[in-house]
Length: 384
Image (cartoon, rainbow, N blue to C red; front, top):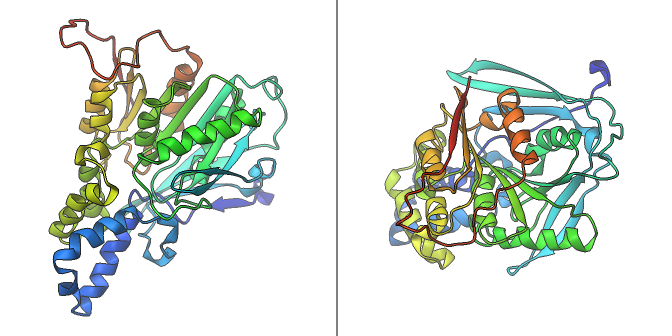
């Protein structure tokens, strides 16, 4: 397809980790201007906690922060991947998803960056040819479920779907509950969403669309979900976790610092304190570190050295909690907003990871044997 006639889709939702928190911050700022902040009083924590779990797709777009990253790709690429829906729950929700079949897309990636008002902005441009069938189209080598970050939708993982489809993988783009075109009034940071994903696999299997093995690639919020999901569903094989958060409260405070610095930290901490009660779970159940400490899994972790939201030290701690044969790819200079699209550094190790059968380590025990002196052959690599 010629560049001159290429129709591009540019994301305006962009890379936000916790849009609900940002929306809350801006709403509180408006309230402060109207001298209504005292109304929050003792109920401030509960108010903020409820905003944190409010479905991101219910917030008006004007509340969204400015975009640090733009994605540009041909909107017609998904013509052969119609929107489908799957009913999940409880609580009830209807998930929107698309299936991208194996084909030759000849995906090409370019990027640019510039400085606007003292901040670096990035744009990733993805170009493809008209899709043509390949040797995998009739018999995919497996299924990859792609999980987006908070406040985004399946569109943010389209480049990954196209690239993996070239390699023979049937890819499933999902709008998680409360995101994109999916319904659901609340989110639960993976507690309910992991069950949603298992039900989606059931739907795919019932429609003869689930080709094993099943792999999962998630970024940020979706990465934490991918790790949690693997602990409860034995059908999930290889997992790639790009910039997962370790402790939820730390990620929230980091995003607040970067996107809503005007909101007092005391307000955010108050909301975080009430969040487990609002969701009806113990506090540490929301943390990925707790999930892996109780039920370690094998996974490929990815982190950027410039990530201020889910820093390398935290991702490395998850890597250290993981089971043998896990790997960690460190992308030099990549930020939380850009690391997912650093294809030149990520495609080779991700393809190698997906194409290798899982070893027979026992990933179904909830704890490690404290007397076991075996040192896992974990591997950490830095990509320049």
